Amino acid sequence: MIHSQEKKIWRFLDTGHAAGAFNMAADETLARQASVPTLRVYRWQPFTISIGYNQRLDEIDFRKVRQAGIGVVRRPTGGRAIFHAHEVTYSVIVPKRSGWFAKNSLEMYNHISSALVLGLRAAGVSVNLEKRALPDPEFMSYDQKFACFATSARYEIHYESKKLVGSAQRRFEYALLQHGSILLGEQHLNLLDYLSTNGNGERAKTRAELARKTVCVETILNREVSYGEMCGCLKTGFENYFQVQFKNGTFTTAEINQINQLKSNYAEMSRRML
Image 1 (tube, rainbow, N blue to C red):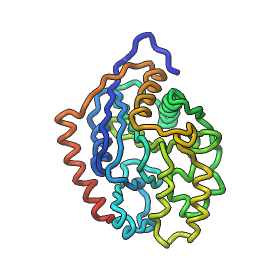
Image 2 (tube, rainbow, N blue to C red; image 1 turned 135 degrees about the vertical axis):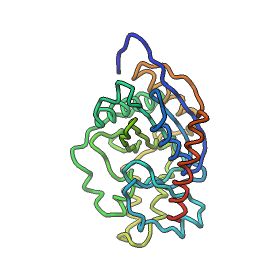
Image 3 (cartoon, helix red, strand yellow; image 1 turned 30 degrees about the vertical axis):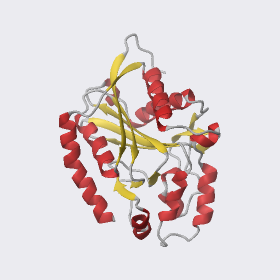
Image 4 (cartoon, rainbow, N blue to C red; image 1 turned 90 degrees about the horizontal axis):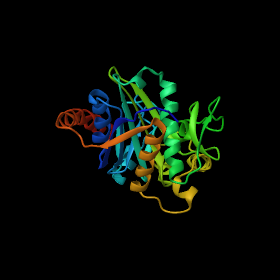
């Protein structure tokens, strides 16, 4: 926990449901324009597969995606594919003018993850930030590598050694952006239903392994957990860890204008993919 004599004001945005193009345009816009550190929480409508900035597309079965009405969008960050359904998605934007921006990417990843841990513990989820020396050798096929929750970074948020949060980070010229998914339910496993036949053909085995290596909040707590409940706990976790006070906000007119401009680019990418 960070100790400070005076609590600084950070911005909190709960932007609710939106399509993938809007959500990614909003995160990029905040990275371009945010003047104070910002925590944003949001959801996806329709359910969406997001892929990393440099990830290949030929492993997705776009016919199945279209039939299911699933969205597809490329993130401005790296990492692997995530199926966004019953979850809370968070983004943290640290502008260049903040002292936190001077810290290196791994330091900021660990600070943000530590705040997430406090938020999850406030919800009753006894998670830990665990160090992984090497990628899990059990996930070596491309079907498995394709999914974000199939792999572990150097430090990950785990519950009993199972992955609960998947995150990615990018440092822009004027801000650092980290965003990720907190699994409320097990729908992330459905990602494997939308992979093409170009993989190794062992989806059932892969799904079982993914289920064994991941966990969701509702399974841990053995009850339904709402988006609103989890968002409130995350807000508390960040306030306590960074010793800040959040000011609830909405997008400014300038942010909305840039979101709409960037959204068309993300939407065009999505149309090309589909």
